[in-house]
Length: 210
Length: 210
Image 1 (cartoon, rainbow over the protein chains, first blue to last red):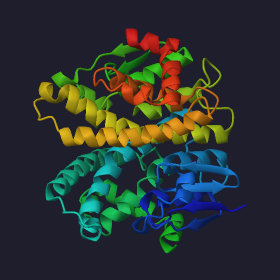
Image 2: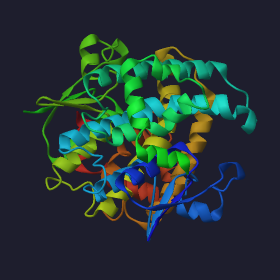
Image 3: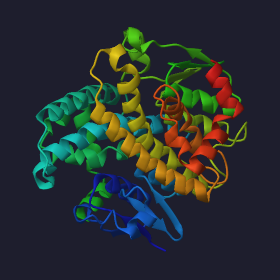
Image 4: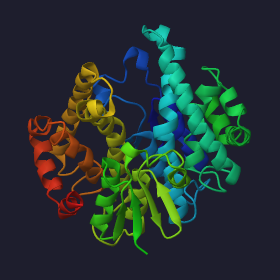
């Protein structure tokens, strides 16, 4: 049975679809329109009680939280497609570390910038210039640390592409695209090389075409 | 070699020490005083470039981010002490889901309340009543969902204690302790039973005595 992915238009859903694409796992996107409140209907809340996307349905198995889902498929299909976890438990530990860093130090400032730069007028709230500037500053500090890390290893998790890198792609797309801050990537030599490398993977081209 | 845990006075460090205690793994706490800026010294930034606690050193292996660390030890010592991951990949998926939910829906509102109720005067910023109220509202909504979940299964991950439950203990300690909102737990029958159950584990008693 083909896996259903609810909520495909957003970064967190793309994170998980990208994982499925790397593993060569077939899936069916099911669009959930947040602007129409489709994530708050009784049917959707049955699937995901917090009213958040994405959610997967894989036969009778339902799971939410994109980073829990990518771990599940990376482990379940470890030997199929790209190995996204590393060869040893120590390598996996480092991969997990950079996935967590993405969740806490990268995703939040880019999300704040995206909301205030791209969606403030659409959603009818006032653009908060101070928050945008503070987010850019926070993100810049994180990117300086990535720059150092990527001067020492080809990818964030080590010498192999993994969940650590994959996790960053959808939010970086917002950064270099709609919020127009590609210079934050390009001003940092190793981050820039890394971004070219990971964003040119066939899996990501496939997700962008959906 | 005994594992060194840097930063033991805070919730995220307790999350990881609790995991080590459940697995019966010896460790040595290394206090890091954030009020004295010990997390921003050049030596500490060599260990953890973001200047955040906790960090572990296990021989020549260094790892940070508490949730990455608990996964590493839960997997590495799967058959030692309490199994914290579940028996199948599907069970582990659900455990990971509730660990992620803690990180995004539980930890942040309690952290905001803790900062503004317990630390505002100590750190010299103005207590934000609006933020406190919004955080309590957010947390209440999450707790209503936990209440439903815990009416259907004994623990968050299923019928077994796991990383899913363990992850919640340190922040709940803030909630029922210094910020004095134990009623948020006690007003919900199944959450209340669950809290009594998990907070009475010998591992947690041990960590509290440190």
